[in-house]
Length: 177
Length: 288
Image (cartoon, rainbow over all chains, first blue to last red; front, side):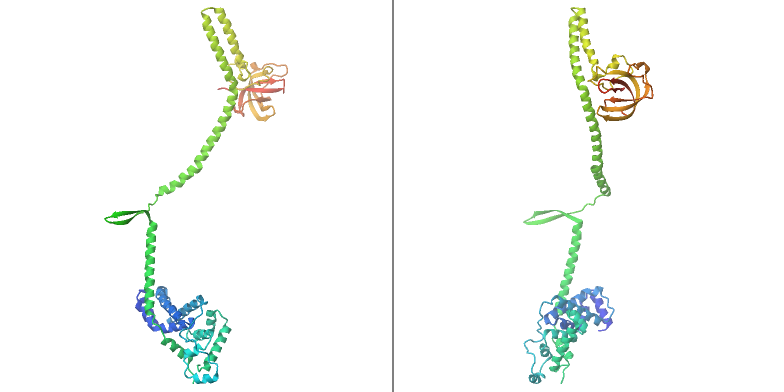
């Protein structure tokens, strides 16, 4: 979607025409959802926040001023909403049903060699600790820097980078680069 | 063989992408309805602020009861009323009580003082006058009764009674010396000579025009420094102990009443009281 097409969609939204929002939704749902999912790291919460994102986009269209790329703008809004959600629900332990739980982390090299070819990305991510998985998700899906992740999780940046490195070590053992 | 983590992870997420449009649409509709309701409620509230529900009646229409709410528009106060009400309040709260208080305190103080003084002055006189009236009536009755019988008896009875009346004139508080002596200039009663020394006081001058220079009060009573402005030589009674008064001299004398204008010019009679304090007693002659 070009900048002009996006501006046209916003104009329609301002006129309370949902078709403008539908076009944006069709174009960017995956992009927005993956960003949000990378941060909240839980499917149902990611769906709720994604829904809120589009509702908010519809209501904020009247006062919207886009000076940068609309894609960057949407990513920033989605990321901020997801971070807010995580901060508000920081006491709740996220349970990811997208990544199947119950898979034991691969500890044995011999076993690793046998299963590595069949292991999906979801199974590989399930072998990570929750903190590690969150950092990897935010880095890969949400395109966040270590500094942004550290600020969002209110955790020292050294801890974030250490978790990421540890996660990548494990994933490399499982054949992921 | 290594796998691309980023690519596979994103694909996995995208493959499991939920369909949220229905939920989003419903949420937007709900939000819009909520906004509309808020706008409506705001307008209703605005209308309610401009109107006052005065009464709510329940009427019977056919077989149904209908709740009828009567709404009346709030009346705006006219401008003149807005300005007049505070002014009236100030008038009531401040000006009227002050003026009333001033009138009452001034009038009350004056009237109470003068009333008490008058009452104390007049009490013996009233008693005496009552007795004199009774005596006069008795004498008149006696004279009228005796007229038919004997003229000599009538004169005797009348002299006796009239002597009794004249004795009233010697009563100190009545200040009748001037009248007895035929002083026609000083009309009315000005002051009193001391009753305790009424027999011993000596009239020094009965027609001095004086000016009260200074008024004060000491253990002897109310005193005044009098400057003699004019001396009626005819009434300057020679007395061995005093030189005749001349205009310009000053004399300190006891005075009696406060009610007179103290700092002014007056005609007084001056008495000397030798027995106790060797002081003078000035009796005012106040023209009515």
